[in-house]
Image (cartoon, rainbow, N blue to C red; front, side, top):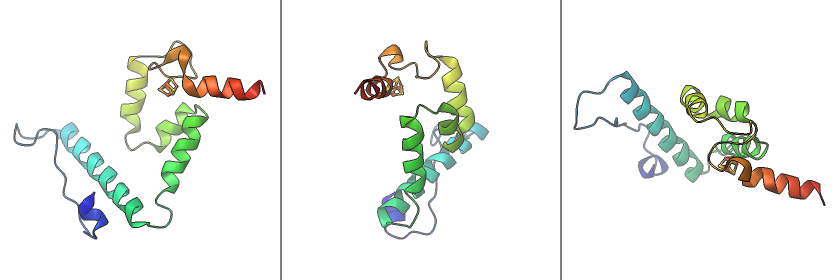
Length: 114
Ligand code: SF4
């Protein structure tokens, strides 16, 4: 990210298998995604116009508990969909981390009562 923010035109990537074994296709995919995240962070750090828009839209969809929207905006929709399916929430509109105690849901409900 620092190199990108300092003006590097190309960011190399490393895979999770670096110095362990020859990377497989999934390792390469993960390395490229990590590199894209670093490049995106660099664009934000440099103040590239519109770079933050994706993050703001993700934040709006997160606040709305819009899971399909979040998946669509993510850099690896297949993985997010897989994670969500692996540990399904007890209530469909929250996630399995906090479940019924979802802070976003709780705040929304509290604000509606006002
Ligand atoms: S359940 Fe917890 S982690 Fe999941 S969306 Fe709600 S606040 Fe976030």
